[in-house]
Image (tube, rainbow over all chains, first blue to last red; front, side, top):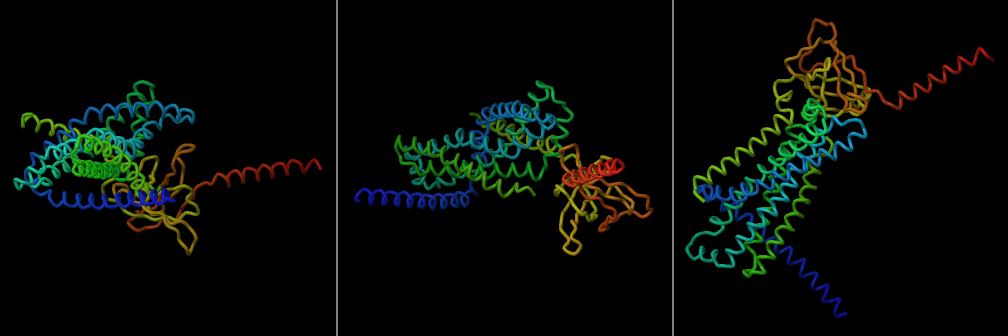
Length: 263
Length: 160
């Protein structure tokens, strides 16, 4: 009996904890948006964050995009060939990349490459009391540390997703047209006939923007909220990757359900 | 890192990202093709539209001249009411006929326009009077079987 009561109490405590953290995170997000003004006036800060979140993620994004596209080309050809419609390879590669794989895989890579770095950096700033020092000097840490990182990452994410998709389509082209020998004309023309700029490409860009906001807010909040110990920072970094990956996949389902309902 | 080098890297990254978006829009999507520009609306009624969808192409002699803008159902005549957005560069006679066709055996459905001989041209808001709905495979098979049975019946009659 005692054990049952304790486990129920523990469960309730956990749920209340999660809800409370959601509330604090939402307040933190609004606070970041409100304090964004000063960081846009000092644009050099944002540029620095675009460099560390975007430019440094380029290699992993480009290489993964190329390989994902190449695998799609191989697998797609294998399946389409059994129906005698291997000319539709371009459609398959382009639509799956632009609609789904580009934004989602790029965001997952971004969460583990840049999101974890943001959390570790801010968590360590907290642990070494740099954030408290800023407050002492009347420098707002949200405006100086958090907001530039937010905007740098949010600007980088759609660009990285677009690069991922473009690279993937190039990879599909390499495998499909150059290696296997699908007709080049029908590869591109069927793709162009099927991919719609507004419904497919802009929706993909919008998706990656939403994922960028979600990943960055989670990473910043986990870092800002991390217990100032070595273990606390390491746990916060792990939580960033896990939570933002789950958030990306959940949001992807919701966004896809709204965007592509077979109009 | 030097400030100038950082600026160059960020600039190159942003340019590459925008170039990727442009590549997707122009080379992968159909932005360069028929999409923008002036259109005029023409409506047509069909007994059956089959699997026609919004944004399906409208072709004449195989060339895309417009897109399906809207599909509705008329509760008075119990027919499908399809609105076409045709490119203003292409004008058609008023007695043009429309038919729903399928590209390839399993391809998407589109509307084919066959130009008539009228002197008057179609203008915004006009209706196409001659239409032919989609061919339903089940009806086709049914008709085929019916004809086969009919043939057999006439063949067997003289023998009796």
